[in-house]
Length: 310
Image (cartoon, rainbow, N blue to C red):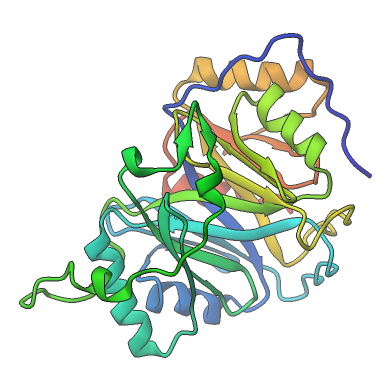
């Protein structure tokens, strides 16, 4: 059943200084999944206990967290949830080094040059989608007045030789996810585009850069998108069972305590439940996807704490 969103009379923009924090996953095979994220993505294991793990960059910035639930139910085929998490590298040479590494591992990749960013796609061992990408310079993006132009519908392949040509012959090669790697965006499966747009635009305060072909892209500060949603497999679909394999939550790191209070205030005014927990404030979008809001950068400790609820 779709969550009803009462739109406020006036949209207050979300502060564009936000960033995305960790994406948390419920997994059935912890050891195998930890090994995948460390070996394939080059993430550092920042913290781990019997049922939780935090992975990120070597300077302590969490990107992916895992909650171990060996008996987690599988979500229905048409369920909402995670489409992919999208990790952004700082530079094209970083992406090129990773591509050489992934090729040596025999990883099967999809790929596309979206004109806003160059992206490679694959799944983790539990079927969670992953995108690895690097942004093109913003002045090249097919954007006008905060909206994608018709050129954004163009899909072309990455010029692999040009990408690899960014590497110096004497370069060190892949040594793991570089400092500055970030969670660039998260792409979710939604059930109702209208309700989803109302939630992200009219309540949360994001700009909607694209709303067509079963997809809604929400961004802030002129970014192509921080949160994508689509109905390609989930139109009218069910919300996942509590504790199901897949997305546990994704995290939005807001710019200040005042901004956190403003956003949670808009959610409350729209009749959307917000629960305060030790790790932040938890709400759900109209498709049942869990959103963690906090006003400080994620740490290994806060990321672990956010995995305690089912």
